[in-house]
Amino acid sequence: MADPIQTGVTPTCPACEAPLTSRADALHCPACSETVPVVDGIPRFPVAVEQSAGPPVFDALASIYETPLWFPVVYRVLGGPRAPIDDRSTIVEALDVAGGDVLDVACGTGRVTRVLAADAAAVWGIDLSLEMLRRARRDAMRDGHDNVVVARMNAEDLCFEDEAFEGVACGWALHLFADIPTTVAEIQRVLAPGGRFAGTTLSAESPLALPAAQYGLAQTIGAHVFDHEELRDLLLETGFRTVQLERYGAALFFSARK
Ligand SMILES: C[S@@+](CC[C@H](N)C(=O)[O-])C[C@H]1O[C@@H](n2cnc3c(N)ncnc32)[C@H](O)[C@@H]1O
Ligand SMILES: [Zn+2]
Image (cartoon, rainbow, N blue to C red; front, side, top):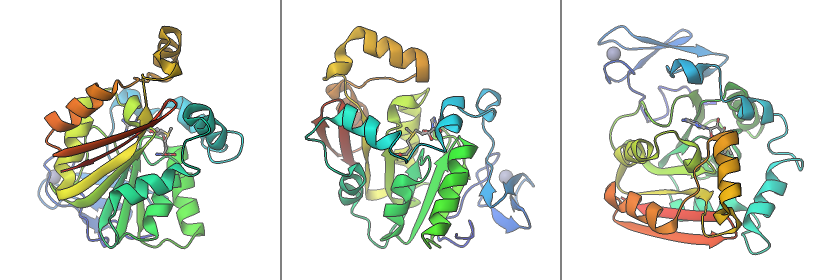
């Protein structure tokens, strides 16, 4: 596991946006004295009060998320028989950031983070759920990835300098953010010129077109289901120059270049 300050990507102060430095058990802002505690190796950037209890569904899912009881089944149900065998390789190939620094937004248990870590210089995985993050850290260490940092951080308020990353991944989470345009603008801000943003989300041009399905998703996990043109327009309006979309069932793979 990497030291947050030694990765080549410097996190910034949540209060004044100055670069943070490392102190025992905390990241420290020399400009305004704000501290970000590091608990069990996981920096905890401030999140809103209603988020600090954690998204209960993801905390509860953490222990089974990558087992055959959850992700592989949900992925195949969403994507159908034509979807890529492994969604991660499609995301990682679209990013094409060998040797670069990568941010994995809403990294969960680090499923995508670990694949990115094999080729990237450094990978930061951020998520709200501490249970997900504990697994992400444990499994990155198990696999010997000493270029990974996981941190609790809200995707809507990324504490990194502008243009800090060559690539940003976001697997199965764009539909979950309370303010999707703000989150996409944050992702665009932290991407270097020419950098790529790639991931997966939910397509409305699928069985999820059923109003009952969309209502159920909105009520249970607050998920939005994307119309393709809506997602393309959002990415272009946010400043991405090119956008590619590929749909398999309800699984919408996207990649965009800044
Ligand atoms: C379905 S999981 C996806 C995990 C991983 N990216 C993958 O592909 O397996 C969605 C994740 O989004 C996280 N999440 C939801 N809202 C978030 C936010 N505003 N900021 C950061 N993470 C968030 C949840 O805690 C959860 O771990
Ligand atoms: Zn500060």
